[in-house]
Length: 108
Image (cartoon, one colour):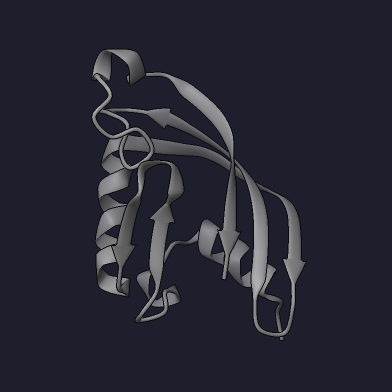
């Protein structure tokens, strides 16, 4: 049986909405944006791909138990047409073609 970390890395390599729990949610703490339910999460992530391009995701550390996983991920994105859920409402002139790297905390 594979670990939760391996399952997550497999998801990163090939994103698929079936990987989400039916009652799951995604939260952007800094902008207070929350998306609930698997279908809505899949649509949200698809829309994000139009606003920004993930250039790299590297797992820096992982803590895993029998029932959960906590990851620290170094994420590099390029803003294409705005800030998406990371920087909503910020003028495109400040963002377009900018590449940023930041840590993301992921908990299952």
